[in-house]
Image (cartoon, rainbow, N blue to C red; front, side):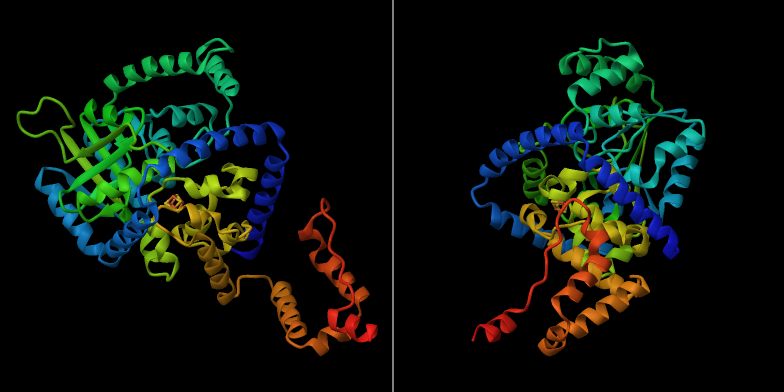
Length: 462
Ligand code: SF4
């Protein structure tokens, strides 16, 4: 991507952020939902006897797996295929989509139910299926709502968080003729009925995975509505699309990761449904898919693994806590980021997953660096430091414009010697600040005025 199109992306981000930050309805909805989350998460985290120790252990377990990723993935493949499943390694989104299409072609699949998968968002599976004449339906309520509104998920855990109950009722009124005043309970009951029918009819189910257990070849799926379980149980084909970083070493690890995920994601002590799927239906089993595939998706993860220290971001268990804690996310919302993964974790990983640091580097600047994201992360990813590492990498690669590089050099030169700094009178300093930083500072806040330095003031007072 060239400098101009990266600049355009940055401009779009600024415009969208501004629009959302000044949208009072959006702010009210997010503030309300975040407050609900905070109250629940506080209770959830309060249940642990020693949360800091558990977080440290979880971080170490993830670190251990990432250090031996290849071995654990091979182990998973071996154990999963031993029970009749098939593993497909996909280098990028094209390979993943191609593999899925050829499975569907082979099995005459025309309708698909999907559940719990940001990874399928990442590869743009829904659009791809549509183009190929395959009907695909999101079955988690939040995902179903954003599918109806034609948006991408707003949040990795709560995809329709930006919509108020009234707006959701409006969506169901428009699409299904429900009352405009339908209550959340009525909407949920309707969606359940509507979707249940689709589960019976679907030829294939596509889900993500929260964890892949190497030791047993199991796919762990965590959810609150039970739709993933239905996507696995009814259709004759089940495809799991999972990033290669989802692997954990043993079943014992889930003792730690399941409660951490639920407490940080929704504040629950444990999510309602935690399923372990070990492969297709075995001989004599009446239910379950006849064929099961796991697509192990790389799509830039190896690149991230090879980038130190940002590789730590691969430990992420997608709980969404850093999004909820981020003051920038809470103001601009998930869509303004323009990426599948938003918030602090999205800003850290998007440049590496896409291989387009220039295109996404502005997201690493969209942070107050307050460190709240790091503070709440259950696997102790130092997110705010990672944002700085991305910025450092961009400088190393000479991605900032020539003017910026020249400006920073001049700034460094002036700041490194008091005499040089004092040579410039305050009026000139203020002029330079207004001219070069005025636009970035924005019209809504007053730029601080530079006055005579302390040493000069001190000297003149003597
Ligand atoms: S980076 Fe940490 S806090 Fe953010 S989603 Fe991942 S695990 Fe959760």
